[in-house]
Length: 342
Image 1 (tube, one colour):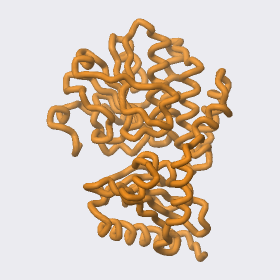
Image 2 (tube, rainbow, N blue to C red):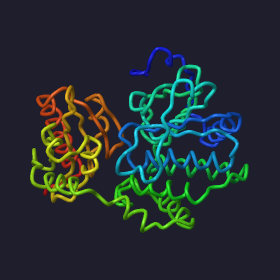
Image 3 (cartoon, rainbow, N blue to C red):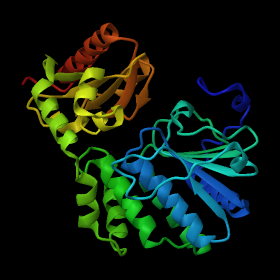
């Protein structure tokens, strides 16, 4: 529970129930609430946008009389999907708060709610921080968007709740984003089944994905910088340091930097890699893997995440060297255990 303000520590934890019980509790809580405010994590990716926006659509279409608000800092590359509302503390009076795709409390984008608000967490990351009153966490799904589709499927069968085209589009986008267009190992048969159901709805899939991939000239030039400047640290390990000067030169922010972390994944012989991003008083590390389990390593360095995609934080570049040493050992052990000789 570290990182949660004292005023929220006393929250009860609702875990280890079957998912249908949690789906039921969440739906009934939504049904009884007149105002609902939906959050996501900082520096949002497509799954953060998709899960947040789809929850908004599901609630608003089925309960048009309710006041439903989405909040969070808009991303320049994704705000074509929808834009969030500026809120004040007064807006949270008697509001139900739903937080999607956010593993731990410090990553919640916008924290104007208080202990008087009932919190619902819907997420697919390992449950290290159960900060809500109801914590719906399923680590077996590819994305929070896939989890929300599962939630919808249950309440559709029991209560006749409908999913509109806009919600389907947003959920599809979220799944595509977190699976790397279905190339990453978190893509399961269930993921593909859900995606196949979503594309039956009326939205232009190709146009949506093309729009998601369009980048500005500065981002294109920054991606060239990535290919020119990544380093091989050890057999099977690569990294890239991005300084504040680099970001200023290419006019990119840490969130835009992070979108390029998978560009080097196809390097021959690569098993794990990271981007280290200078954020002034700390260095944010984006870890990725094609085999070794990295989330336990991320936890050692004030982070966490998925087995193949995690984040960490180090105090300075010297500590980054320690992390890289640990990552190299992890890769070495993985290769020995799997008898990989190349």
